[in-house]
Structures are given as structure tokens and as C-alpha cells.
Image 1: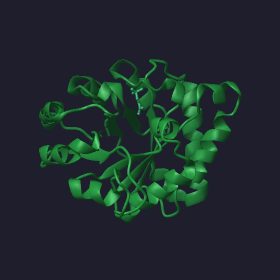
Image 2 (image 1 turned 30 degrees about the horizontal axis):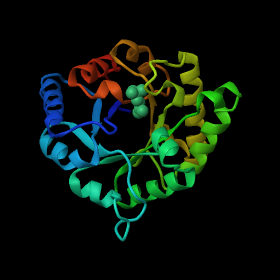
Image 3 (image 1 turned 90 degrees about the vertical axis):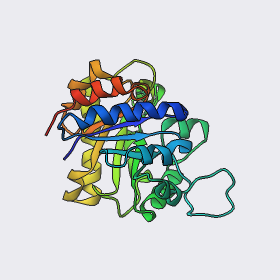
Length: 249
Ligand code: PGA
């Protein structure tokens, strides 16, 4: 399984910032590697980012999509539109969407069905809040989000899971290796139980305050198959440090 290093730019990035993707491409072109790299810029930049990465092995993705393919949904963007713009992945159910847009697991599942209908891969984000962890509910929350948010018909070709404890996102606080390993094992077991042995090939990313200086031990953990990176994905140099820390092979 190839490690996936995915950058989530969130609501950051103007045309001038495409230079970071170009710089990333130049650096990656000269280094043989077995790590997959994905950048998810804001929707306004998906098409230009995809055009800028033609012939460069950087995939481009969206950060959200509507469940429907088209219709009277002012302001929404469908998975088909993201595909048309050059995206191959779509992040879904990020904790910021769950918090600020009240997205439920059922909505995440419906969006993931849209992503699959458009023949793209869904990166479904799950993770507990600090309060939930402190109350001993982390395992239950993550299990429920996984079961309810992931649609039938998912597999290694169209699903990535990102375990992102909410308390680690943008805070500089990183869970212990034991805490990460426990959740990734739980997620793997849940996937295999539901989808069978082939779910061993679904990539499970860790996300939350990952940076070049802490990435290597996290990415070496069993069932950690990559990272979803926010802040440290905005500058090519920072993301290159994480890519260099990933196990090659
Ligand atoms: P962070 O964000 O790396 O800035 O903590 C991760 C994410 O929200 O995907």
C-alpha cells in the first residue's frame, strides 16, 4: 500500500499560491518516491491546480461536495463538477464541516455516495472531540462515525479514512503513538469486518498538527497509511519535509 500524504488547504489560497504546488512539483520531479501526494485547495483553485499538475504526480482534490449531481442548490458544488475540474479525491465530513455546517454522518454518507457515483475517491474524516475523549467516548464515537458515514460499495479504490481527533487539529497537540495506534487498529478492524479482507487495502490517514518534525514516528505506526495535513501543507517546503519523513516503499 502506498503512503498517501494529503494536504488540506481549507479556506486558504489565491491564484498566487499555485506557486507552492509548482514548487512541490519541481521538488518531487527530482526525487524518486513511492509516496502518493494530494493537494486539496479551495474549490476556486481546483481546475487551475489540476492544470498546473498535468504530467506531475500530484493529485488534486476537493474539500467537500454536495450529494446531488446537479440541480437547484445555489452555492453548492457536486462531485461531478469537481471531477470535471480535475479532482480525483474529495475530503468529506471534516470536523470543521461537522461543527460549522452541522454535517451529520447521514449527510457524509450521502455525499460519499455522490463521490462514488462520480467515480472519485472519498476521504472520510472521523474523530472525537476533547470532551468525548475525556468522557471515555472516543472509541464509541469513532466507531459510529465509521459505520454510519461510510457507504456500501466502498473499498480500497474509492475510500480513504482520515482519523483526525478534533483536539489535535490546528492546536499543536498530537496524540500519543498509543492513542493513534489504538484508533487506527479499531478503524481497520471495523472496515475488515464490514467489507471483508480487501478492506486491508483501504488507506487510513492520521490528521491533526502533523508536521515534518513529528511525522516520522506517526507514519511508521501500523495501520497508519499516510497523513492529512492542514497548516503544514500550505508551503511546499513544509509538506516536502513530511513527505521525506514517510516510509518509502
Ligand atoms: P492541521 O489540520 O494539520 O492544521 O492540524 C489538519 C486537518 O484539519 O485536516
